[in-house]
Image (cartoon, rainbow, N blue to C red; front, side, top):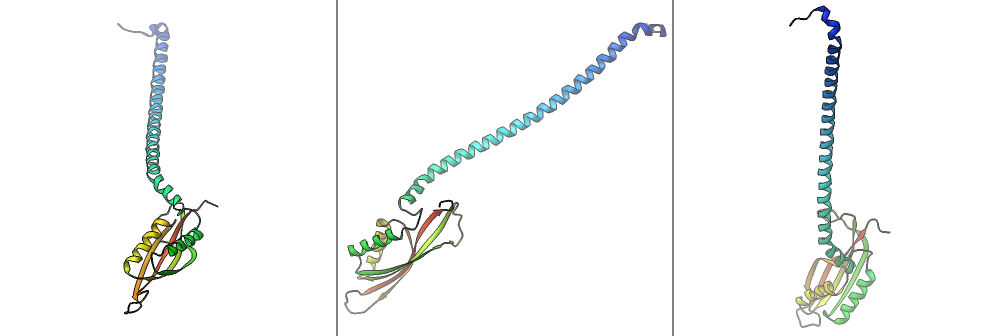
Length: 198
């Protein structure tokens, strides 16, 4: 079959329709590719959001577990009055009760003003400020075990957190005296206060 120029007017509408359908097909393919690319980008964004949401959920679950694990310790520190203001009056009253119980022959003490405490090596205290009220004790003893009992009673009967730095023991006399041993001890009462608290 051969075509001549006389056939052109007859075929012009068919050729026009073919050209139009090719242009429409090319446009549809282009739009389809654009839509596919946009869909892939949206899918990737949705997957990233899902990944981020899962990470946040896992972090929240870990925080919940950590809070449950540390809630007991935190509440224990609150009950012992370690968290909050300095409990100097409670310490003084507690030490006087211990003196009256007579677990040692006698003791004298001084509690220094509260100061900021920076542990060495440094630790991250989070949102808490650490403070320490230094204390020195002069204790008259019959024997060394009384010293251990005194500090055990301080730990068990007094609110607060006392940390002993050290003690020096000396014999006052070689003869049988009322107080043959004297202990000089230093330490400090620690408190933690929330930095955002008034």
